[in-house]
Image (cartoon, rainbow, N blue to C red; front, side):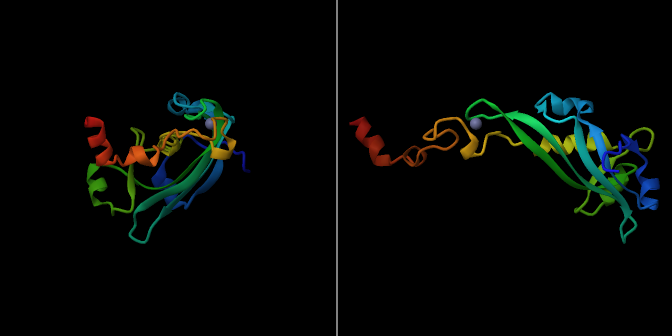
Length: 170
Ligand SMILES: [Zn+2]
């Protein structure tokens, strides 16, 4: 059951009425925008989606996903494996008016022209957001010299001593 292929698009309103829960995989090769910024390290993306209607009658699409990719360490410039993780709660909406009415704890997700949500794109977007701004190894795994101060300035550089500046002027 775990390797069930997930539907790429789905009608979130019908699915919410059925309280649908699905768990399965997408092909990572289908996420082109993600693969433009990192290399794939596994063929599959694991994901689960839950469709529900909350006590206010709003549609809720929640779920999670993970994928293994390769990022380039900005300290030693070697590639390393990184698990992208996503966790999300959306409320599918039919139009702009519905977005304005959503409580702030839901992010809106708009439907495509067929009234469906693109689950693959939704997850890809979440993965893109979750990529670290400056990817790098854990210090213990990194082959860059241990005394490298990349990414953090020594204390004396961080807080210039005004008297030092005066000394240089003399
Ligand atoms: Zn490194």
